[in-house]
Amino acid sequence: MANQSPLDVYLGNDWTRHKADFWRAMADHVSQADAGQVVLVMVGLPARGKSLISGKVKRYLQWTSVKAEIFNVGKYRREGTPHPDAKFFDAGNPEGEKARRAAAEAAVADMLKWLKDPANKVAILDATNSTKSRRKWIYEKLEEARMAHCFVESKCDDEELIMANILDVKTTSPDYVGQNPEEAARDFRDRIKMYEKVYQTIDESEKHLTYVKVTNIGHQVVINRIQDYLQSRLVYFLTNLHIKPRSIWLSRHGESEYNLEGKIGGDANLSSRGFQYAKMLPELLRRSGLPKDAPLTVWTSTLKRTNQTAEGIVEEFGWEKLQWKALDELDSGTCDGMTYAEIADQYPEDFKARDDDKYNYRYRGGESYRDVVIRLEPIIMELERSENVLIITHQAIVRCIFAYFMQVDQAKSPWMEVPLHTLMKLTPRAYGVEVEKFKANISAVSTWRPKGSTAKHHEAGEADTVVGEVVANGHGNGKEEEQKNGTN
Ligand SMILES: O=P(O)(O)OC[C@H]1O[C@@](CO)(OP(=O)(O)O)[C@@H](O)[C@@H]1O
Image (cartoon, rainbow, N blue to C red; front, side, top):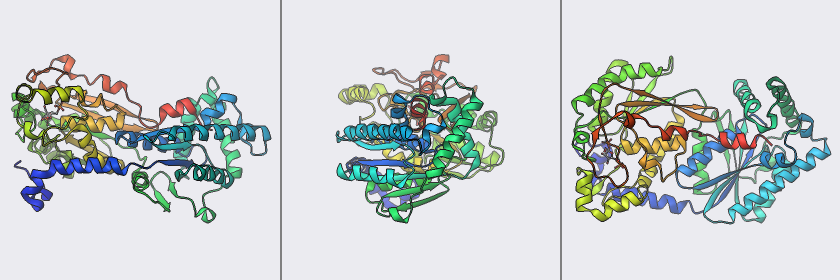
């Protein structure tokens, strides 16, 4: 490919020739390295973002094909006590204590049962676990089951964040269904006070535990005794999290000459309509609501069509632009530069195999969607750390990034329709990701191919321009768990 990254230049032709093998090896290595199991034990007062963190961890793990599940003690407690008032949570209330202990025991028992299946990798015990004696009990249970653990304490002194969590709980927790919202908020604050009376942060006396302490979600992270690969990956992820308001804008490049010809891959220039889209992108961004004070960084792939699309924006706003090799389009190996009809003709078995399992099918000498997700992991880590970012990339890459944020399952994500000349704005909210779409009024071919079809890319009609199904899947960060489970 004409546009080589510094890494390509440094490593020379061998690297360029063997990069698909490299990503393949990485993908295989990562799945092998995931062999262990671990329990993440959440610790912290109510309204400190434990469920938010649990949801984000689960979303991240599932996207990388690591099976993860959240066990929320509140859900078990609610079976016996669906609408408790604050006094129920008073440590001096023996009945409340007994019921809460029973709920914790039931959750841990179910969790250990779930972990009996070696395919299940990460269990997240979402509860306050706010006393040393409760943590000692959990630690002993996990030691007895020979299960690795990692306590994750979420501390928070940011009043705004606490208030946002209280507001969310009072409106979404099943504990307060049908209650006056003001009364619910008052009761929830009293509940927090009950926990504050007995809360013990993890300290020196618990040095034997593996733990991560996160203050104000990502502001400060303290780690202790992190032991294996999976734990380190999780710690790295937790270190990168933040909850500052921001948006991520996602767009494919403008229509390319290859898109017009129905060819896949390659490094073609934009078509004249593609250039029009590039010109219009600054206006489209303005329409979507630009961040007032915070700057925006533009990320592109190393290919010409994404860089040409970014030119107008960089010129107009002077924002920093970064090129990422990892954002290059899915490598179609020996099929690069062919039309779908040519592939079906020359490699009929491959064409069918791809339709049968598009997520796992790996092009000869190229990549699968699974491989792409592995190489996008550093991009996701960087995105979690970053504030406002505009990503201009390719069809398969947009699908994988979108699938991460919106938890689209692996069988569906490679078939999602991502129209050209459409800007998407993803805004993480307390318990989900909001998606807005802004369509440029510039026609383009549709490169979406339904299963079985070998049709050449056709002019997009109205129906093609809706991302539809995808948006409906939109909960991201544990909202579903929280709505079902509430606090314990
Ligand atoms: O996985 P499928 O659906 O084939 O889509 C990926 C394809 O999308 C295309 C367009 O058809 O990407 P791009 O947006 O970079 O032009 C091909 O280059 C690429 O192979």
